[in-house]
Length: 194
Image (tube, rainbow, N blue to C red; front, side, top):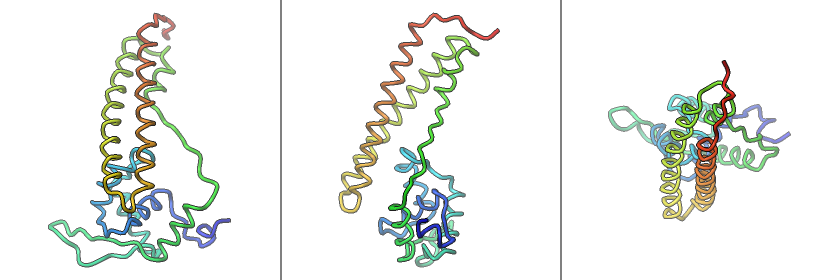
């Protein structure tokens, strides 16, 4: 069993994601962690809720993986945190451990089309068209994020690689949705549940 598991201090994946954000060397507040997750992690993992980030920060501090730095700042009393040596070791052990959990895809738009026999054709086409617009916006956002990661260069080379992977994935999704919409537009099926 991996060392991170036998220590009895196993974190959920969200905990490792927060610890990973801290591993880039900057002291960050929960608010800053959330903003970064929204502009990076969400393209390939998910962006945890603000409350989940604070829950994980408390857990990381309890385990000795992160520590508060300085005084809380600003009108909201934002506390910054920094990864500790123990946190770096725990993160490294988790990153290098195997097996990795399988990827799970939950695509609501595809589920709706898959269940198309329970809806009218125009509603399905409208759902896919709306999803295409979302996919276009996502592709624009991930391209922006990938560009920023590449501009940052030092310490972000792996992040930039992942973000370019996410760009290709987002572009492929957009192309697949366009193909799906074309198929629906050409489809004159009438196998709707009655």
